[in-house]
Length: 333
Image (cartoon, rainbow, N blue to C red; front, side):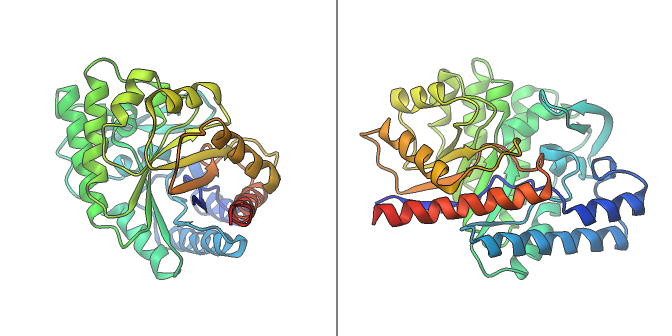
């Protein structure tokens, strides 16, 4: 029997009060803040906001508790943007939407940072629920960055994977890890690089004992890239069933998938809040199209980060996901 688990890909919106406080402290909106050198007042705001988003996840009954990545002003580029060997330069559009990040330019060896681990340690200390870690996938992080040190595309991707694996080894105990890989969809790797992207994901996943979900979104992965992705050792692929149902289903039907699955069924960018029953029905519909498939765990999640949502809508989406997982559990007993 499939276990249904409610969760998110992380990267939460800041509570409204925190946006106001940070704007007053720095004279800028949150996404203009310079990551990594916050003073005590700004750190205090982030700490309080982190506690609030953790409490919110507890209150709605979410099965996996994420730290929230509230300090990730540069979105998925954050782990590089705060690294000593990285220079942040001009503002770059984040894929094809209206959010932006500072271009991370790697100019030295990517040794251990510990920035994300410190955030997770704080989250773990404030919660006894199953913790979910979140990292950019190695291919997406390499795609968002500029290399001025390693000099070779394959070497750079391998260095990014080694860096992420080293960061991951310092994480506190966590139940799951979401590796966010939208670049596999938005900037698909070509011949040769698709295989190396799979090897890089495999190297990062091997650094944790947690269940690893490689979450893809904003569409469906090209067939050849998807087939190579399945060669890596991890527990679940995450599929964006909001942006593209047909091609994601085709990939699963044609090539199979892992023993677990993550279903991006609630829209992480749209303020319309789905009914729990609608989310459950969408999950049932996916499984109806896969009569031969059996999954140990199905993660019910938003398709994308919830960063884009007003905070009240974010809370409502989490509650809908939690209620949907509970409804599905009842119906499958």
